[in-house]
Length: 431
Image (cartoon, rainbow, N blue to C red; front, top):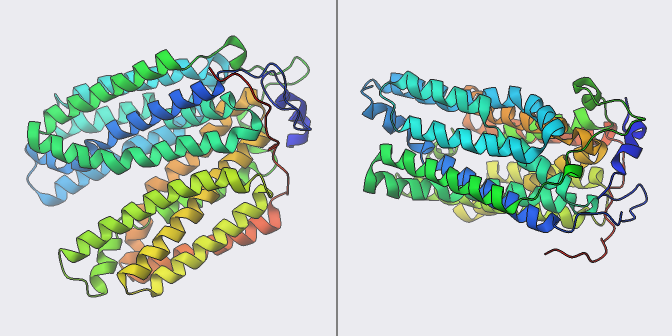
C-alpha cells in the first residue's frame, strides 16, 4: 500500500495538512515535550555508557581470568541487548501506538533502573548476560523517544525534533565513559552500576514530570481507514529503501571501532600518540555527527529529502576516501569531521523522510522498524569490520566508501522525490 492512501490520516489534530497549513489545535506544549524527551534521552544514554565500556573489567572481577573467555562474555553480553531490542522495537512501537508512548518509555526506563541495580549484585558472568537480555526485551526506549519527538512536533519541525533526540543519543555516550572511569576508580565498578541505576531514576522522573501526553496523542486511525499492519508499514513509499539507508549508514559508521587504532599504528604513529589521536578522531566523529543532525533540519527547508540524502552520502563517501589516503593527523581529522557531518545529515534526513510517509497512528511501528534497522547495523558492523581487517585494514574504509556510493545510486534511482512539510509554523504559546 502506498503512502498516498494514507495522506488523510496525517491530517489529524495538531498537525499540518497536506498543503502545510497549521491546524489550530496543534498542542501548545510541543517544545516542552521535546525538551523532556531530549533530556531523558541524554540522561538515559549517559547512564548506560557510564558502566558498559568497563564490562570486561567487571567480568574479571567476577573471577574470569582467561582473556579469551573474558572477551567472549563481554562481546556476547554487550551484543545481546541491541539484538533483542532490534527484534522487539516494532512490537513495542505497536503497543505504544495503541496505549501511548509515555507509558512505554516509563516502563523502559524503570526496567533499566532494576537491571542496573541487579547487575551491581551479579556474582557470575551469566547473570550479566541474562540481565542484559532482559534489558533488550524490556528497554529499547530509543525508538520510542524518536516517536515521541516526531509525534509531538508539527510536521515542519519533525526534522529538528528527530535531530535533537539523535544529538542527545550522541552526547550521552560521549561523556558517559569519562564519568564512568572516574566513578569506577573512586567507588568501584559495583557501585558505579548503582550510580547508573540512579541516573535512570532521574531520567524517569524528568520524563514523568515534564512530558504531557494528551489523549489525542494516542493516535488512532480514522474510521474510514484500516489499521496499519507491520507489512503495510514496509509498503509505504520509500520506506524500505530508507530502512536500507539507515542500516547501511550504521554499518559503515560503526566499522571504525575495531580497526581505527590498528590503522593509525600502521601509519607509523607511536604507542601513546596513536591512542591520543584515535580518541580525538572518535570525538570529532561524534561531535561532527551532532552538527549533521542539526544541519538536516536547515537544508530540508530548502530542498527535497532525496537531494539531501544523495549529496550527504556522496560527501561521506568522498570523506572516507580522503581518510583512507591521509597520513597526517590534521588531514585525518578533517576527513573524519566531514564524514561525521555527512552521515549525521543523511541519518536524520532518512528518519524524517520515512516518518513523513507513515501516518501518525503508526509512528510507533514505523520508527520501531527504522530503529531496529539501525540497531542491527550497529550489531553486525564490528563483526564485518573484523573479518575485512583480517585481510586488509584499508579494505574496511574502501568497502565503506563503496557501500555509500551504492546507496547514492539506489537513492537516485529508486527514491520518489517528495517535498516535506516545512512551512514555518505560526507563533504558538510554548509555555
